[in-house]
Length: 380
Ligand code: PLP
Image (cartoon, protein in one colour):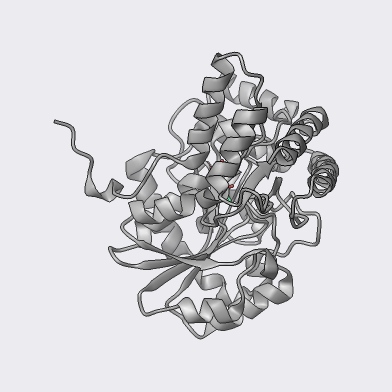
């Protein structure tokens, strides 16, 4: 008889997957579904990146690479971050960087602080590694950002990490340099706590963006920066991300990776190198396109009587559900069943009473989806 390992206890099928599956079911029944639920840009991978991948495959870059990544890609990432290549590990997406970090450092019962709303996978990755997620709640009244006081109150002797995600999925919040420095001042009093700064949406910022290590260089010897090509270069399917941090941590993460995947795909690494070293104008073009979509979405939601903050980065809005139906799974179900619009309930991100709408779609689809949301809300 099949038995799951206890380390999977409490780890459920992600809410995002559930809603996506329900949307697919409705489509099969012939319902015209508009899914504003997924977290990937609709732009194509840039052609010069695809060409570089073809070339790499043809020229024989088809073997195992070094576990921590090809020397060329590690050097390119290191150069962009002003560190040495041995402070960089290349992995199968930013997600694997997070998993490697937790598996390499978290012992049973260790605590990892995260700020709700947070990206769904944070808590489950920590649990999978045997750790205990400690949730700090930061609602719209505080701009979806935790305060130094909150952080200070949550740190215990068992705290191993605090995870920050700026720009944030799902709220779009960006911590300013001052705000990061306020948090860093608390952390400087607790030398046993490490910082994980997930900056995967760095290039999708509509206000000035500061990297955590730039705001708090004094904490660099216990900060892991997570980034990758998925969101900036529309390369979600290539599965390529990286971690930048102190050498002993990078070595431990590489040891985990050596037993789990042996490293990222050789072809994807060649493609990522082309993305990082090729023309960069597309970053600003794509960011500007996302910003216009954001403006459209926020104004249409407001017109429909929904409350939402204007996101400062990434490509998600995180509105409050309508007062007439404040329960988020019920509200999302209502949108899907009455108008065929798929969005994700806030509880998937550790914050009830909200929902996440992705605006990484063309404006026609966004306009149609928002008109449907307005109708569904008016019918409540
Ligand atoms: N971090 C955050 C905040 C994300 O939203 C995502 C993807 O949705 C990731 C990490 C994972 O990115 P990747 O595709 O590189 O694994």
